[in-house]
Length: 300
Image (cartoon, rainbow, N blue to C red):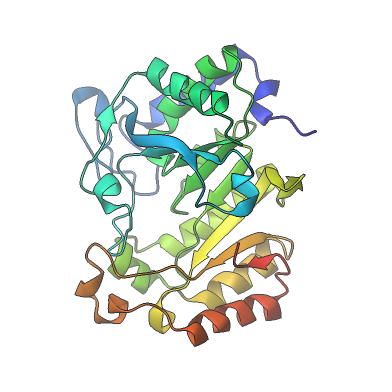
């Protein structure tokens, strides 16, 4: 049975990683924006996060991929703020409107332990990048109190390789979105004009650390799981995204090609986003995945 990577690190090593991540947080360079916010002075950058854990909700989540849910559910911790401002974000109240509460590091550690107590299959950190120092500091405490669940890094794909390198040996399952195959679309819809290059570099580093997804008894325990949301009128650039994954990451990459887009938040400001993808548009994305050789891609 595969055990969580962070169990191989000492408490001192985990605390040292948290300190290195904390150094990146002020002036902030945790994500590709490198906004330079001095969090220790109370400045809030693009993501609006400070130095304390900022949590909107937590609990067993049964709406994730089957390999994460199992019988006990995925132990989701919805973290507030985000380094992307997607016009169509379904969690916009959390990611952009500031819903959530700042808590202590010990409180976040207790949440992780509580998810284990109620039988969750993993600790699923939703939108974690901008709170990486707080998370690793809390993990060090929770590990010492008996946490043994795999850690899932459920992120938007707009990641800094420097930050990811400090998570090596800590994160068991990377679950990034790969949202776009075109930077102009990424700039328009998410305010990230360099998204494609950043996401590609991030996936390379994630795969270098954890490899292809390993599933034991129906439950993911280690590796890379990529999400790609099909948008109407080809806005997601599925061919560029899926072909890149097949050719430059691995044809064995586990890819969830998602069909659940619906217009929310400010989506109707972009006329093309005002409708759901058609069945034909979704099938075209699946066909691209098949033709590219991604044999583990599909609706998951």
